[in-house]
Length: 125
Image (cartoon, rainbow, N blue to C red; front, side, top):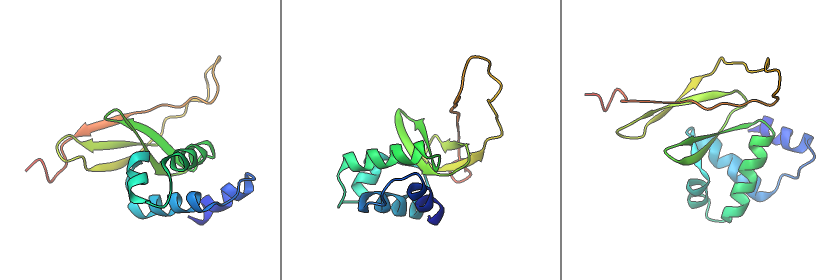
């Protein structure tokens, strides 16, 4: 959490109460969350502040955004990664990403998404 705070400050942004609350809740959850989920969990902050904070965290490279089941989810991470999601119960785990897309001739800032689905160990019984 400290690295994220330092990155926000180093980029010239203020550490506002909404930003701190979103970072704290995301670091406590240890799973990807949608902006809607965060808004429900953090009652004192309006949804617009949650969306703005999430956008800033992604822009600064300390959070990843991914679309799973037609909903954008966010998780704190400085490293690109994917998720594997249980089709039955929704349990999610991170999967390391080793893809590097820095050799495209006509593109810069290339990003990708990959969502794996399956049955978790618990649901497969």
